[in-house]
Length: 211
Image (cartoon, rainbow, N blue to C red; front, side, top):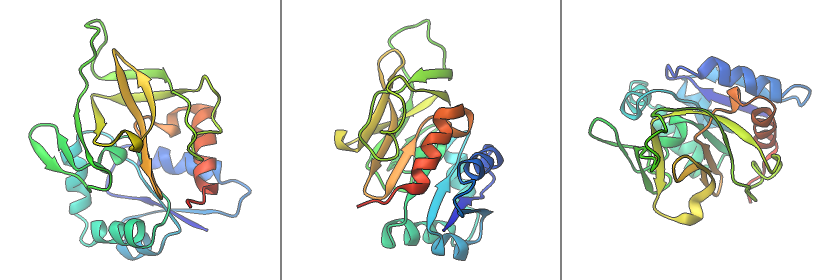
């Protein structure tokens, strides 16, 4: 099985790939880092990392000719399992509202907006560990009931449909921690920084067989 980590200059690219390789040890799964649209289009599974601003990450994808088209082919047409991480998850949205309005991939209807916790003592960006709400999704249900994951973000995903929300955290109110449908899943937190919880999630993503 070939897993592709999409290389478009994301800051967490190397650490995400390294964590995937660790999760794949002993399974025969091959993890490749590439910006080649042909490799993305034929991949068995795809991981899209991301840190920084929504618009910058979208521009990074657009800077590689044919890359977004290859993602659409593999993920939407061929229904390959897909994992978005942090801004990689946010790019799944219809629109990002950060320094203006910017179109996302529009795979899961919703907007990415600034975090506005109702507790004024909570800092933006949120940096640190937070407790995930339990989920029945195959990639998340194997996590401990009190699983903590590591977050670094100033913006969050507001999904148009509650059914697309897989897990939440509390940060001065409910904040979406994971979204998904069909063969798509995205997580706002960083599995590559979430120690055992992150490695378990990545291992379960590699085994996931969407119905």
